[in-house]
Image (cartoon, rainbow, N blue to C red; front, side, top):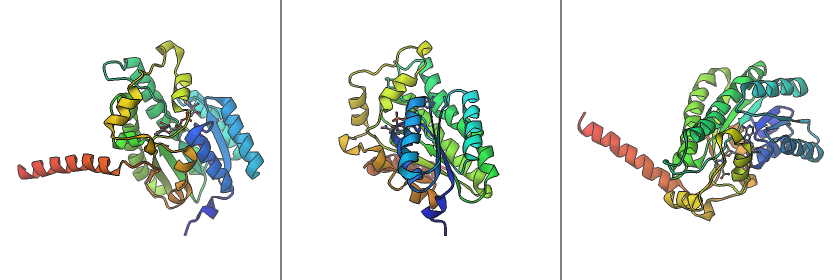
Length: 282
Ligand SMILES: NC(=O)c1ccc[n+]([C@@H]2O[C@H](COP(=O)([O-])OP(=O)(O)OC[C@H]3O[C@@H](n4cnc5c(N)ncnc54)[C@H](O)[C@@H]3O)[C@@H](O)[C@H]2O)c1
């Protein structure tokens, strides 16, 4: 049986590793004795993650700047990881940016940016690191960060929600396509986390597509539409508490926290009802 002990000595790569969920993932991996590559568009934060983990756990670590919106940058990061650590056993394609806005306020540039980073960024991260993963044997996993918002959508986040739905569709397909090679794929569903997500999204947005904006009532409107309150927000450290267990067990999905199961069932019930109507009139 595979256990968390089997992760010792293996190599983890985390995009968005400079902050929040990605940094917490890096810490879990280092605590399990893995070598860690923290990749982020914010190189100083990635460096801080890598240095603190090397100091605390004595594992090999590296940091590199990567922009997952740029294919050459992702391939350069993969080459750096191969040169410094020798490969990749666990890849976390974790970067996601957020752009609030009611549907008539989200611009085509907003959509393009969110889809470019969240969807194509995930796809190109996997494409660049899959050759490294395929060169290895034994316990290998790919983790993709989606969002509770894709399971229970709310208002003001149409582009973000659509992008995370695409991550689910991609991840479910990837799991099937890689199963025969023994490479597991897990989709991670965080609910709200007390991270730098708004700030880092604002910083990462390219200047040429205009200012990152948020209306004063965007967050409240979104939370109210999803029937969610502050009790759904957790720290990134809390969100990763079951990560290694579920990863080792090759679970397809990780729900990190949040009490939105009933709302999710309401959505499923509506789909079930649609099947019923179809079957009533085949
Ligand atoms: N914070 C939340 O409430 C929440 C909820 C559900 C899902 N998520 C998802 O969790 C993941 C991590 O977010 P977080 O909350 O830890 O936020 P965070 O801001 O703490 O971390 C995200 C990191 O991604 C980096 N980044 C942004 N654009 C990048 C790019 N183009 N290339 C490389 N790095 C880039 C940022 O610099 C930052 O360090 C994201 O996919 C996010 O969508 C967050």
